[in-house]
Image 1 (cartoon, rainbow, N blue to C red):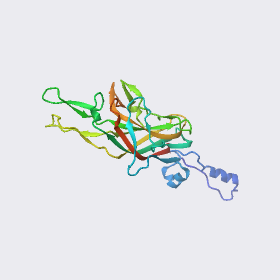
Image 2: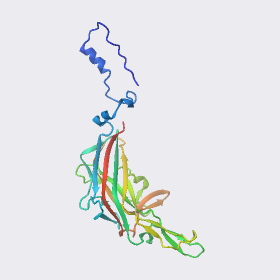
Image 3: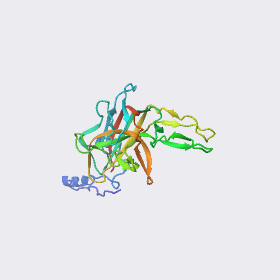
Image 4: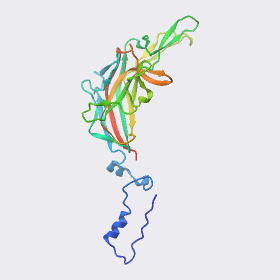
Length: 299
């Protein structure tokens, strides 16, 4: 840490305003950095007063306020592509986080977005056994013959992902943030996202099943499915501009599904499970949630 060297005022020395000003100017520091400031020199009251570390925080309610899930919003599985998905709302209007004056994120900032939504996956029958879908394994029985059992992969899911508007306060120009796709990329006949484009995505399982086997070999029992039931799904997204400033006017959540894992050419993807694992035989109910927006200083 640098040191200020100033000789004291001597006996009989004339004290003038200009001299005093120059002495005190030595202690005026406009730029704080690792060389002229120690962490012990900064306490919480100073940070609170100047918004030094977190200059912006906002929390917004999303979804539908329905404490006992008496009338939740219901989303049906997507049956045809392309699809814009479902905007999280209260059943009447979209629920978004808005910043009318614009929230500026510079290279010295990091945007931190956290959200949660109360959800309940539903299904009828055994949609994971539908021929042509990605949602099952076929396990051959031991002892010869052609008998097989169909077993759910248990990775079929709903995706809840973030969109932002970085155009203007009208909130009519929604798009996916950096490192997040809209599950519209075509990969080897399937449609979805590479995993590298799911950085603002939260996942909800469509179902959970199990299958008993006789002496560990022959699967002859009926596959048992357990209700996923109501749960909170949580997501997070972090962003800092590579250069310049990004101005954000709004944030919202989109629901798409059902989706399933997929591998092509050694790369992993999350793709739509179509057809026909879709429609009203697979649904997602949701009620209330929150989305929290934090702008934090990097330096």
